[in-house]
Length: 211
Image (cartoon, rainbow, N blue to C red; front, top):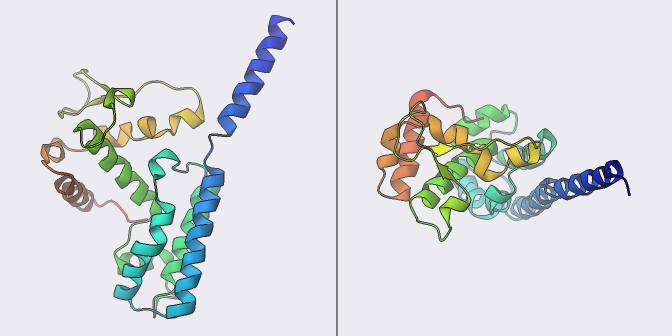
């Protein structure tokens, strides 16, 4: 077998392997399960007020679209829409919001878009890993950076180079840019809840949109 043939076969095998790492199937399954639970809520409760909806949605529907999402977070628009349309449909259940624009429904209900939720979850998970609050060997995921030109906080990370799109969207890669943008005072948090609160306050202060 010629080196060229070997190379082509190796490339085809790699492409097949990496294609299986795309989160499409998981997104479809998660959206399907969440939609099923949402349908059950609709049948048994009908129209809900905002407080009732948020309790049921946060406990029974949204967790299906966020369980271990750091491992399969979507990056293709079709997969992002697959999940987001569940939340779009869910917010219409609230009495009086059916004919209001989706972005306005999120604002009224005090909900983040699922994209923002995933980013928030990524940042929280990084904090937990780097501060040894997870039973994970952090150096298998992240490399501390000693470069002085990066924004100076105590948990700086190095972003390794990657040529493959699927690799660029892995948890340990995609979160680095957002992580190093955070202000240093967030990293003085002594608990996960403190980190969450400081992150939310920072986003509010810089005007991060919910959608």
